[in-house]
Length: 109
Image (cartoon, rainbow, N blue to C red; front, top):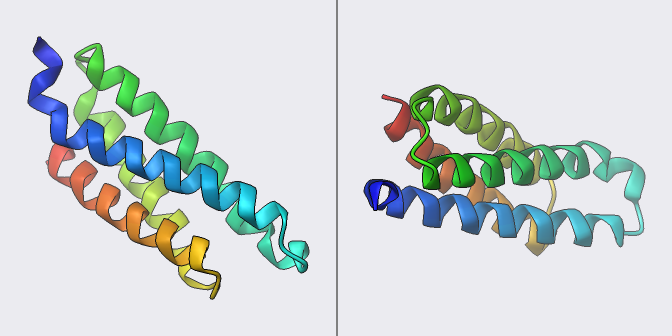
């Protein structure tokens, strides 16, 4: 299958999407939800983009590099926002975002 060349990136994208969805859900349950607004928004953006790119790579999109660049930028923004919060779910999400950012930048190069 053509998408096997992207297998490692697809795995990283999926893990990032899962981490962002978990962080999103956990942030909604935090007491100080007002300070979590940017984190929640970026979690959604990042999860959606990672899921989209994952599906596009499985379809062997001819736009892999361009989409990977956008995904890397979103992952970086989400990771930076999550790093601002001490919650374990935010720190785990930031780690996943930065791993995904690196994988996407490699793909975009």
